Length: 259
Image (cartoon, rainbow, N blue to C red; front, side, top):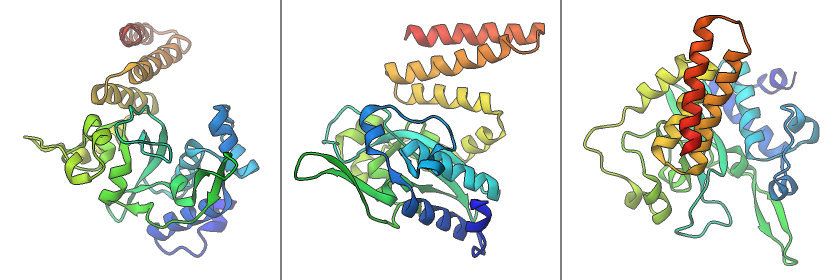
């Protein structure tokens, strides 16, 4: 019902994306308490009930709006230089935003940062300050790339992806940009990704994250992706091919857990 109400004045896909962005930025408050405690709500509808959420909630809800509108959209996880970042910090995957295809072009959308910011008040308390920003919607700007590094390189939307060490080392995009002898065909990667089933997407993305930046966190994500799909197959229809595939996935999970 909310989706149908929001899209009434929108004439194009771009306008739908903008109205989703605007409504969420004006009506969803960043949940500082959950961010600090790590105790996030898991019900996908909770963000609409409480009108509060963290980056994952903003990105998930925006994707649901786009899916309902038939707009190609993906949630992206990655490294972000937020309010507490200092140059040279060793980042973990700490943020989520979206990539959306409008007018034949993939572009970035970050409603969390577009809705406001968090900072300490004079009493040392971390608070959320609403402040609508329009530079976080339908953009491919280098300013955006200087602060956001997808954990999978295809979501950088460039033929010359930035490497993790360059991202944390530099502030300026020109210094971050890597030189590649062969062009990275991110459009082909996204096209292949779109054709996969949901389980296959999760595995492809998790393995791609590990190959891009191998550390214990990305190894664990890859292990979990394989483990989860192995369980789905092993507990599903009891056919030989399912069990063989499940065994292969369990072996891959063990390999990444070992890393």
